[in-house]
Amino acid sequence: MNFDYSNPYTSTRIPLFARNVVSTSHPLGAQAGLRMLLKGGNAVDAAIAAAAAMTIVEPVSNGLGSDAFCILWDGKELHGLNASGRAPQAWTPDYFKRKYGDSAATPPKRGLDSVTVPGAVAGWVAMSERFGRLPFADLMEPAIEIAERGYLLPPVVQQKWAAATNELKSMPGFAQSFLPWGRAPNVGELFRFKAAARALRAIAQSKGAAYYGGEIAQAIEKFSAQNGGSLTAKDFASYQPEWVKPIGKDYRGHTLHEIPPNGQGISALIALGILDKFDVAGLAVDGVDSQHLQIEAMKLAFADVYKYVAEPSSMEVSVDQMLDDSYLASRAKLIDMKKAQDFGAGNPVKGGTIYLTAADEDGMMVSFIQSNYMGFGSGCVEPEFGISLQNRGHAFSLQAGVNQVAPGKRPFHTIIPAFLTKTVGPSDAQWESVKHLVSGPEGHSGFRSPEGAPLQPSVTLPVMSYGVMGANMQPQGHMQTLVRMLDYQQSPQAACDAPRWRYNAGFEINVEASMNPQTVQGLADRGHRMEVINDSYQDFGAGQFICRAGDPKVEGYVAASDSRRDGQAVGF
Image (cartoon, rainbow, N blue to C red; front, side, top):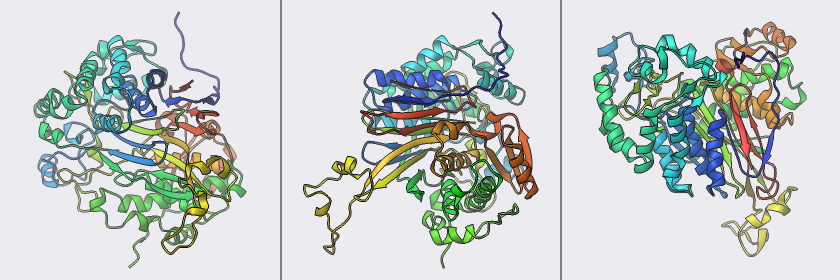
């Protein structure tokens, strides 16, 4: 039977309730993670297996040449992992100006000179070694099987695959890897990626050593040299991901956590810090006042982030300065509820992506994101091992400033996982059920400050691991969905399904076609330059959410998966 896979009807997803959950933007990715949980693995094992499978089933958005970030709750505390890549040692401003002329402002968008050392595989290994339960090789099994046997292409991935063909078909290795029969696969057609299966086997057997110091690194060096790039096996051998402390900002009795710079997660924290100065809940959830306020807060956040955020060692201001409450209060005062504005940066100085999440009944929760940046990244695919390389180097600047390219430096990064926690103490209703988590034989009365005064203890509880994909849509999605959940008590699935807007630059805003027409007109009346978009995948990202419903061993979790992609939340 031949089907028309376009659906003329609105499809509503329902939340998933389970004690062990994986949620991704492709069902086979989610099921790869679920296999690890059923095998006795934990949430970290599930996340790694899902991430490996996603490189095969959603190659438009990520691949074996991706970068990655992670925030995970190990059952007691949060940990952050920055697995973003660093510039090759050959990269300097002069390197690019010699090749592309003095007028070049950034490294190129596509090609080998847009590729930094990919960090995702190293991130998988680091997570597995520190927190995993199963052997690393086991985690690669689902991805290897999918790559070798193939899978039928789903509608959303196929749409973006076909759209990228004209731009990328002449890039090195692209047609050989991603244009079987000389074209993109159609919906429901079988796609096999045996070269990637070969790479996954080598990664599995060597715990990633083949990628960063063996045959895969050598193959990429050869491929790069043949096609005008400067990546070397030495660049790969020197790469290590970095464990970092997540940064956070309180909002409505909770704390949102993000990975610190070089990522843009701080922009969601800035926007929420500004919104915290307003009675958002007193405004109609889908009305023009609420949406206008959120848009203006996001504009203020981006104005600072685009000026100040880069590799931490290059930043001229600190995270603490950018998140200072008094500074954010001064920024909030700039918002005019009656008109849109084009904000500049303030002065805080005193004097193409996949997201997935997994959680298990022991309480471990993982918020993980992995990306090739723009669709298919650089467009370059090392053919022997099917390494589809990201184009994160395009985010560097060739001009003087905090984000200027330099050897071994990490560029400004757009991909960001998010995590929400809540701190409770003796005055909270939840205290009785969690006070056993506070160690000490004397209970809370036994804690004293260095000065001897009694301390009121508190317990930090994990609430939700979540993320929304899509370039600069990511912090905007983090903020919009969290406002819906915390200010308006919408469920994760409802917050996920609700219409979104996307701020671009200046006064330019994209809105989904499903947004209330009166709200759209009201925003236009306030000076926002509106474009209504029907393609939700392209402009508005897609989210995955896992929220604790109580004790993971008893109540478990509630999970949501965004209908803007082919994804699914699965569990048991």
